[in-house]
Amino acid sequence: MPNPRWSVLVADDEPAARRGVRQLLAAFPDFWIAGECRDGREVLAALDRLRPDVLFLDIRMPELDGFEVIRRRSPRRMPAVVFLTAYDRFAVRAFDVEAHDYLVKPVTEARFAATIARLVRRLGTGAAAPRDPAVVVAASRGAKVLPIREIDWIEAADNYARLWTGGRSYLLRQSLAQLDARVAAHGFARAHRQALVRLDGVRELRVTSDGHLVADLTCGASIPVSRRRRRAFVVALKGGDR
Image (spheres, rainbow, N blue to C red):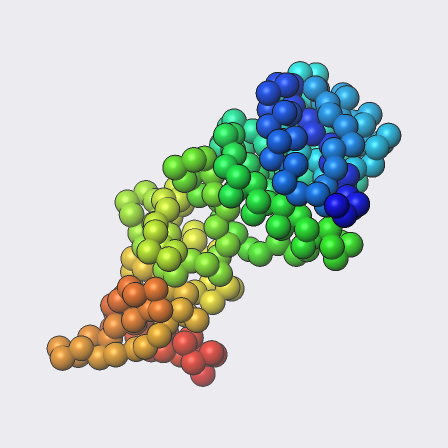
């Protein structure tokens, strides 16, 4: 068995939750648990004493919560932080403090393995890997971090936006105009008043028998391009304003 390469600190006030991390981590021999904590003050002391590579951190803990731990120590001085919590509503705030990942209990083995794979890539470089631009959306089992490069297209849905990726969709409580400003720098363009399309996902532009322009996407969707947006969309697809 190879020697473990990276140390882990587990912080949760519930013994069952700490035991769950131990059990999940047992499948990954590159990681070893250096210590466990029950509250925020213990975490701060353990970070100085143990200097772990990874911290699995609960949010709701006695004394100090997870965010207060990071605030007092500063994100710059934290190890790779994986939030592990029963609450999905803190996901956006977690990424504001540069968390590596955000897991909502109960965590599946597949989801945990994906987190470990990302940790290995990050720790193997000796530095924090740049995070892909992403949005946090509601999913059936809590929050999901959706990289912008994986979104095929976005449509307006009343007070929400519906983000499509690989045939599945997720709702985000944000207007299409707000999302337009957010994703335009990442290769999206307006197809019509209620749709944004990722340009490198366009397989073909075609003109219908009645003269309308349609963008066929590699994901299988077909998005009409309005007459008003046609010229700008085609120019953007060709890669520049001219």
